[in-house]
Image (tube, rainbow, N blue to C red):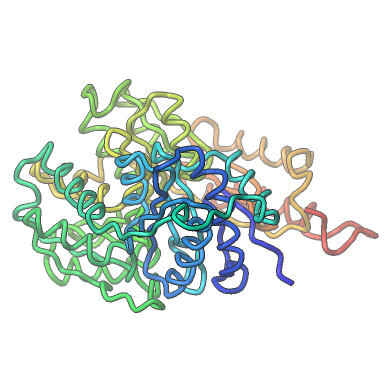
Length: 463
């Protein structure tokens, strides 16, 4: 018998109909109905999904579990993750649920919950649901007219589309008129909505990978495979390209010459343009420990502070709330504009960047070159076990020696993977050769001291 999947930093994930089975999802629906829906009686739970073939099975199982506890469910259909977050907050729903595995391949799927505020649900609530799954019969099973009702939410989806359009026109009444845009939808949740919004704003759209069939999501396309968009922007003489991941909560851009523009550069161009305005309160931005030091230096030169959060958009959002920042994100393209949204939104990110281009009259290549990114190298070193890595003396001797070599011109980050037996070693600095040398000097110590079990130890490790 398979073990039930566990909640991680981005909900629960697994191979659909194997790790993430219909029976598990039904029990999760029962737990969510008993613990979450009951906190806001009379308010429904909204459920959206991406284009994976398993989405139908999982949303039916989840909805059945919720309905069996008396909770009402609104089926939003195929919708980007940020759309679910937006509508959950907009309608004051009891909760929102997104069924998606983001950039993962089609056989995978996942389930992520949002609180009524539109933010990801609290860790303690996830833990309570996880603990209750095995005892799902403890929750009410009403009969007759007290059962939950299921309805579709097409009208709500239109609210999200119109909100995206209004957000683009708020700072730029002309919308995207005159722009030619390549849009790689990744055969995912933005396949219909992304091109439609851009066209309604007046853009000419060359749409790629916009015909999802249930199994082609993220398949050699989208944010994790942006080469098709890079080639198309040159072929069509477009002003920019945007590539979405499967659930469209992030976007990777390419300028008019096909050069990639990552999340660090997006944050830089927005922060520089919005300095001393209400779009950038406190002149501060939240990145992560993986944000390039070039972003930090470039912002610092302009009087803008960079706060660093742990990796993960959940931690970026938390740090934004703690610091009162309105702009934050990750190199991977998860960008949060907290005055407009509670989570990363790929379509919104694209619209904000395109708006800057329209307002400034400058091409994306010029806007994105306002900071100089330092050479950066990340190496993942397999280890016997992660436990104890923080107190390995030889490792930290090597780190201190490498830091002395880089001085104040560079940065070193060593951290353990949260899910795999890997130690990640990252360095950045002005000289590419030196960066490679210092990373290898640390990685070699990790391999030597932690790569194999000591004599007599259990070969399986004990993480």
